[in-house]
Image (tube, rainbow, N blue to C red; front, side):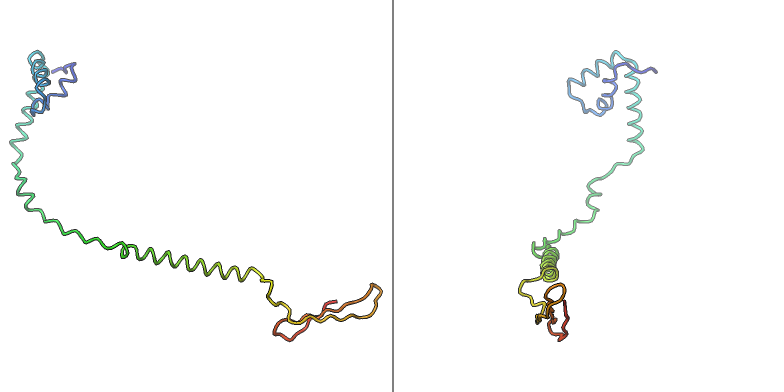
Length: 152
């Protein structure tokens, strides 16, 4: 058995056998089968395969199979938008709160306000003349410590 050079018709043979071709295509394939021994033999082989398949395959009762399947479970009721997003909203509020607190702490730690009292008491004493000019002694007292530091 040699292959027919008309590949298009050969590819239509299973559809021809199954009756899935339009009337125009069916008549084209029928006229080709009358003149081509190779395609007629291939169609006969396809018919044998189909008959063997139908003889060995039991018939299926699709209705019984579908009836034996378990019924669909009821769809869960959709939760409200608030309940489904409660965790996300709580997380966002927490992050915003922590960010605000962190910003406030950072501002108070890294910046010095102009009205903050760094020195409790400043005492300036002028001491007499020295070879380098007048000498000034400045005493600074830290807030609440009672200790004084002298600078010359």
